[in-house]
Length: 116
Length: 112
Image 1 (cartoon, each protein chain N blue to C red):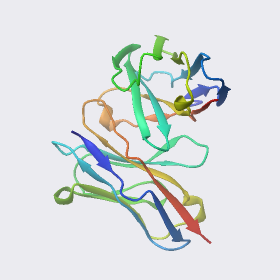
Image 2 (cartoon, each protein chain N blue to C red):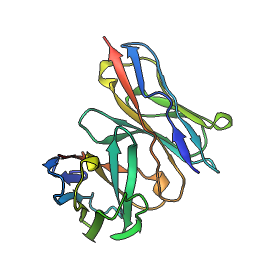
Image 3 (tube, rainbow over the protein chains, first blue to last red):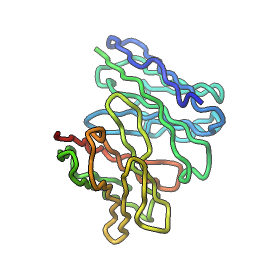
Image 4 (cartoon, chains in turn blue, red):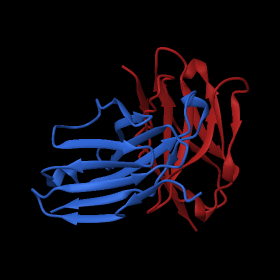
């Protein structure tokens, strides 16, 4: 298995532009998570899905952020419009299913986003 | 509110020396506990996890962690560090309600 796949690995964009980050979870995993990592705030959970349905989006910073999971093998995190403070590394992770705590979260390599 | 604290942002040790990274949590009930490592430019990798039972947990790469209920701590240890251990380490309690909260991380530097 290739593991969790994220694209692009690096993204540089200008303020105001739309940014779309992509994630392909491990096949058969029922849970998908989006995290953001910054030096100031560390690793933060943004949103997670169970069987393609968003369960908790309380970590999404504001309405400029949206996430979708149209099918079991693909998810997107979109920022529109982007701002310099959105610059961070965004991680996607997947998990086989409940009980969550006995399963390991498998993390993708991350997308490093820079908004100029 | 649930929280996790890694009090040391940076730690520097000499190669071959012992290591202890601290983690304290504040939860209503004892959470499940994880340690992850992130090497430069890489994603996160699970080092070890604690659910119940023996309070000393062995992980990969020679790491271990000890759960101390009375201190609400789950410190990570290694008897002898290697230069390849230079990375950032995250403590992550799980509230058993699907979410894992990550500490801010401790960056480990190794002196030759």
